[in-house]
Picture 1 (tube, helix red, strand yellow):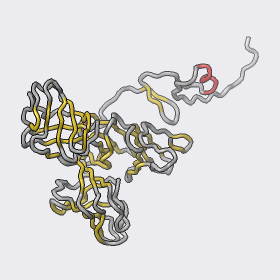
Picture 2 (cartoon, one colour):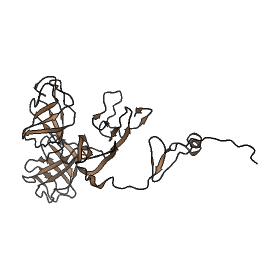
Picture 3 (cartoon, one colour):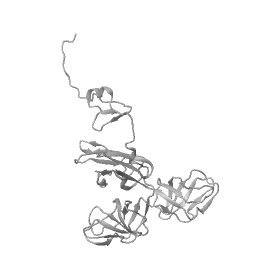
Picture 4 (spheres, one colour):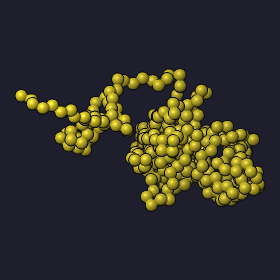
Length: 347
C-alpha cells in the first residue's frame, strides 16, 4: 500500500536524438524521440506530425532555370528558390572597360555585342582597383542598357574619383547568353558516344551541362536538344560530352554552320515578388550541387538565411543583402555542405 505521495516536475522538451540510448535519454531528456516517421523537428526542440504537403501557392508560377529546383525556403514570409541557369556565358573584356563618376556607385561597362538586358546578372574577375573600386566577385544586375556595346551596373560602394580603369585582364561570367559555336565544331568516332567539341575559350569544367541546337547529323547521330554533362576538358578550346547513343561512323569537322549551345555552369537564387521570380544572386558554380541546405537565424535581431551547397563558399542573405563568408580565416568554409547554430554561434 502506498503510504506517501510526492509531486515531481518533468520537463519534456522533445527533440530527436539518434546518438543516445533510450535509458540515458529517459534520464536526461524525457519526452525525446529515437526515431520518427512523417514528423518534423524544430531546431529549438520539440516535434510535430506532418499531415501532408500541398503547393505553397500555385499562382507563384515556375522558377526560372533548368532541371529540378535545388533549394526552397521562406524568409520573413517571402518564398525563395534556387535552380540551375540555362544560358551561362563567360569571356574577356577589353582594356580598361569600366568608367565611373566621383561619388557614384554606377559603373558604365564597355562590352562589345553583349546581348544583355536589364535584370541579367553579371560578375567580374581580374579587375585592378580603380578610383576606389574593385568590382571582382560581386554579383550585380544590369541596371541599364546604353547600346549594343555598353551597359551599366551598380556596385556596392561609390567611386572616390572619376575616370576609367580595370586593367587588361578583366573577365566576366553572366547568366543570359546563348553560345554561337564555330563552323563544324564536332568530332566523333565509330562505336563511341563521345563527342569532342571545339569552342575557343569555352570556360567549361567537368560537370557543367551543355545543350546543342542547329547541328546536322554527325557520324549517324544528331546531338540536338539533349542536355549532356562535360566529361573532360583537354584544353581551353576543346571539351568532350557523352551522347545517348553511339556514332556509327568516324567524322571530324562536322556539325554545320548553325550550331549554337546553352551552357549551364552556375545556379541562381530567386526571390518571389508580385511580378514573379526575380534573381537576387547568380553565377554560383553548379558543379556537383544537387541541393542547398539552409539554416535561418536572427543573431543580429534580423532574420537571415545561411546557405550551403557543398561546392561554393557559404553565403548569407538577410532579405536585402547577399554576402559570401570570408575565406581568409584559419579554417576556410569553402565547400561546406551544411550549417547549424549553437549558443549564438554559427557552425
